[in-house]
Length: 124
Image (cartoon, rainbow, N blue to C red):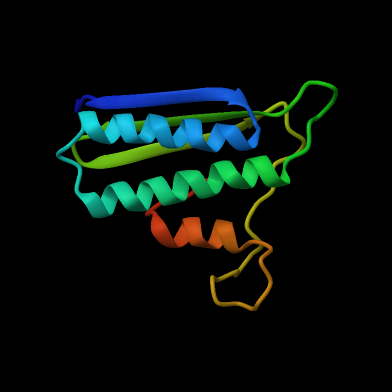
């Protein structure tokens, strides 16, 4: 079985400063996984930051406990995997069916459509 080569993990309050912390974790990952092509780094970073930002902007806590952002990014010999989670959040939101980046001038759902355009597989 192929082994994971490197990974980074972030979990903390879903506040604007969390996005910078996630960027820092990704920068550290790319320093250690220098063999990952620059285009792949930029693509996964954009998708992860967009998903994390969506959590910060669009999730509501399920109760009194604040929403937490979780990001796990791993590097494998033939793939990059990222899991972005919202802990203590109400029902997750998903991309509206059939939405594409150029559907209209609305910003609603555009981030999710962008993520779907950037990566091979997206699961909500």
